[in-house]
Amino acid sequence: MTQESLVKNEFPFSDQDFDRIRSLLLEHTGISLPDSKRNMMYSRLVRRLRSLQLESFANYISHVEQEVSAGTSAEMLQMINALTTNVTNFFREHHHFDTLIMELEKRIEQQQEIRIWSAGCSTGQEPYTIAMVVDAFCKQHPNVKVSILATDLDTAVIEQAKQGVYTLDKIEVEKHPYLSQYMEFIEPSGSTITPNDAVFKVTESLRPYISFDQINLVKHWNHVKKFDFIFCRNVMIYFNTETKNDLCRRYADTLNSQGLLFIGHSEAIKTTIPSLEPLGGTTYRKL
Ligand SMILES: C[S@@+](CC[C@H](N)C(=O)[O-])C[C@H]1O[C@@H](n2cnc3c(N)ncnc32)[C@H](O)[C@@H]1O
Image (cartoon, rainbow, N blue to C red):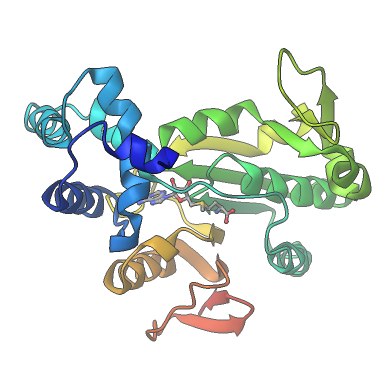
């Protein structure tokens, strides 16, 4: 018997339970789970049932729904945190950061303040990568002020991101000029790291650039200012076409003229958004 089927026997989990949880997830986050994610849902939520000492997924759903109708959302948040996919890395799809530097160079004559949004920042590797690139740029151009807003729906990953502590391959860190410059080795405490991996912390010099916040992209955004660059990469992959198109229209409205939107390599916008010009390389310019 596999580990998975052993786990599956622990709590009743019907097709109806699966459908109800995925429609709650869709309604609250825009994330649309296909049928193939049934086992994933079970294994990620099973520890919530254990910790709440509930006997079935039907009871779990009632618990979440009762909380929501009572106006609280603690367990809904736990459920969302468990079901989001947070895979990320430093310098992921690195051509976007080359474009960022080129665009910053172009702007410095007319603009001294630049605002960047990392929307769906997960555990922070994306905003810290942006901050590394920006800090190196600002050392050459001290008059330019750059701020980065890093947001996610998942409160657990935001907390991790704020810590800025990562287990990374030591050799890769030493090879990468920015990582070796902006990552400090720290002594692991009681960790089970492999010989090549080590624990690193982002340098304090990066922190002033970034503010972290929770923002659900499919709900009202509680910030009003406009941005020059928006990174929303590998987030919309989980959204259906309608949600994705709506979000891109809202990004277009939130970008300053000539601002850029960067999306993930498998997320090309399939509809025409008149104010967004595709530049190739999953980059779009606000006209
Ligand atoms: C795969 S990670 C991508 C991280 C990073 N942008 C990158 O490309 O490496 C996707 C992130 O999107 C977040 N996310 C999913 N739905 C969201 C929503 N409705 N609002 C805000 N963030 C969301 C998830 O919590 C997750 O951390």
